[in-house]
Amino acid sequence: MKTYTLTRKAEGDIRGIWKYTVEEWGEEQAENYLTGLEDKINRLVKILIP
Image 1 (cartoon, rainbow, N blue to C red):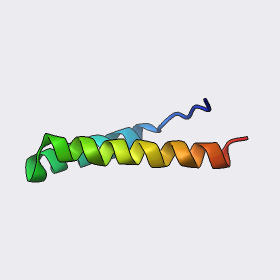
Image 2: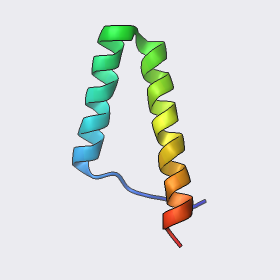
Image 3: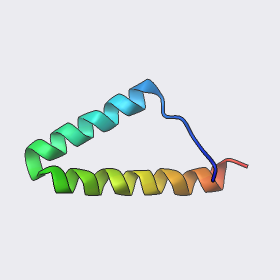
Image 4: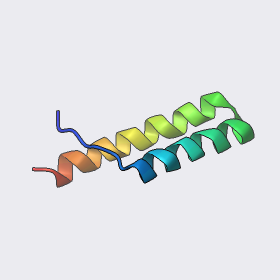
């Protein structure tokens, strides 16, 4: 499996997304968002990283 490293800014953005989503729609929805985001990042990694 190909790997990637998020920048500190990206990690902070993801924490912000998590926090906001938990406050607005709950932990389950936050988990759904982050799982989907991770899936999309992994798809991009497969395409873009040789």
